[in-house]
Image (cartoon, rainbow over all chains, first blue to last red; front, side):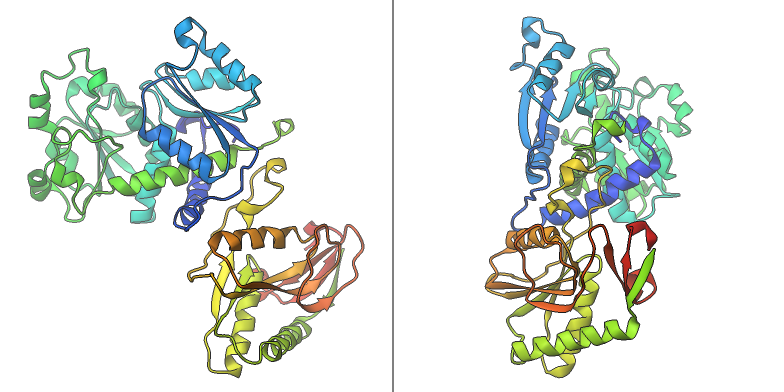
Length: 307
Length: 181
């Protein structure tokens, strides 16, 4: 593995290696001194062309725990607003001898585009509505910690599937792990072509919850709803909000609720569900740091000659 | 090519002797001592030594296992990356006397890494080093306090300690190449 561009590009073996390494990294996070000298001298540039606090901070903590040097460039600090192209921005950063570039960008496949043109390793931290591989890997780690083997598990993903890079990466990951997937959401946000992934589709929340081991609730991305996909937020809440009542009525007794954050409380997820005993949401955040440490460790310092 | 230099019984005897030495060196007092083995073989050897010591007196010795992968000094030049294991030190290390255990002492780089990692867990009163085999070839100023057996090795040769739990056999070999095992 030289880059992490998407779940599509990596094998089940790669995924397992990342997960196993992340499990070891978690032990480092539980120590008094949560820092190891592993990546001294390695420089990581975090290029976030889209707003993000959670993912950026998770990457930053991961990099610093491994003793890497970090540089952050956001849209407003870069020269993008002066008309510089993405490639020029990154080439300039690379000229400062950066080893790894973490990139979030609104254009799908921009990490792939870069990876073919620069020497540094590229990690995709979200490219538009295409993929968000580190999120999917931390979700898989959280599921494995809870259930062990994932084969044969029933998982539903509920919400705005269409715009969700989280959903796409998660579907690809879970398919590799042998999980049975049900997608659930309003038809405008869940096009039929998603069936091509080999998943079940339902427009009825009840069917998205009955018999599921894990219910993965997506955030309603208000910033991506310009196309009038839902009539109103209230209507979405009425039909798709996951509440305690609905879980009590339809869900398995030991169902697990996951969410990539940040949660719109009272929209896709009721507050008492987000904070309830079934919620894995905060474990997901901890695992995010461990998974990102694992990925940076595995990608760093691979001699170019071995390519 | 591989040459067996110690068989199962000889290896057992060395562990027995080194435990005797420890017992008399520390006057049978192990309350403030913890034994930390370096994975993947030092930890198992450490456990065997603890077992022998505990038979001699009424005490429990603290045990830890350490994986030094994240502290290696050659990570930026090797790929693919070595598997990261876990370090298990479930007790306060501050003020303790640490007995660090490994199977073979060669360049000393593993020991340097292990000492750095231990110090990230706290400030021990003192660290002793115990190795089963010292084969020479140091690249760092590191000197063991307890040695099972010293072996003269040519450059390029490797010493391998085999133990049941990992290798399915017991003994010590000299190899011309790691792959000969």
